[in-house]
Image (cartoon, rainbow, N blue to C red):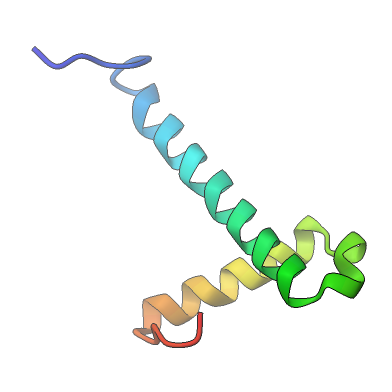
Length: 66
């Protein structure tokens, strides 16, 4: 019998939300390291755009230069 952390339906949602939060944190950290002089200006809109571009490149099979 499988053991669920929250419930059978909520566990996948929880896992996806944790994954998205981790990805956003990584992209934000990468951007702050790449552009330290404007770290305060980097907002979540720019992070979502960067993450979207990375996802499109990954989907297209371009794994270099992430």
